[in-house]
Length: 272
Ligand SMILES: [Zn+2]
Image (cartoon, rainbow, N blue to C red; front, side):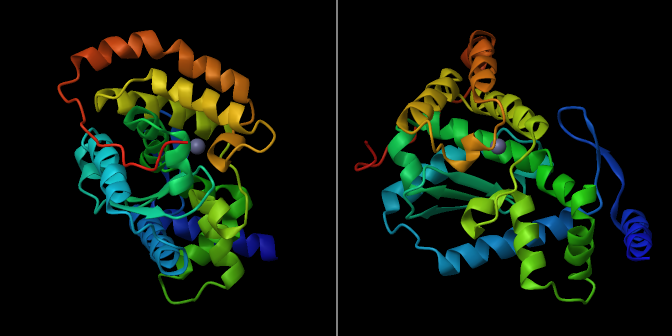
């Protein structure tokens, strides 16, 4: 009975908010939650984190993260570019970063100690932003395992309040699991799409695609047993490195044609 109710509600949600869409990689997606709803969830999560986590008070780090993010965002399609993009630098030792639907980017100070060049930081931010433009969060919320979360998230905007547990799961599905202690890794397919599109984005913005490979190697060497979330969620890390490396030569030709060369100043104190 409960199942039937969920199925019926899922149908209502599809009719109300969407259905099938094609993502930037050309893959068809079933989306049960619309951009407006998922962007609102991203904004709520971001505001919560800004209120409860420690923000860096180093303006040089803030400028640096904004500079790299701005260069990447400038290469997005207009519909994505026009979002109210915002960057926050959190004082956190984990070498991590995230991007939320609605255009909200978080960078941990710990990442700046590993990603020591603008190119390497661009590799991470490009990857995270590609998750957003591929609507991976919305897709995960829409998938069968999350049918109830999709309903709860959607209903939250038509009156019913989410329970704290539903809210946490919804945020984990958006890709901020590490922040809230619920790990729901992106799938291999989502990671591959974000890797390919993210590396392309960084190149169009004028960054060196080899940095995606060197950063991967540094992260892996730093702590093979406990890699950061954005690395560990990939089910086949060695193959990931090979794929990133295989695209470098071709992408470097494209980078030579890029009109911009971002000039982002690395803040002092970010060296390992
Ligand atoms: Zn990822």
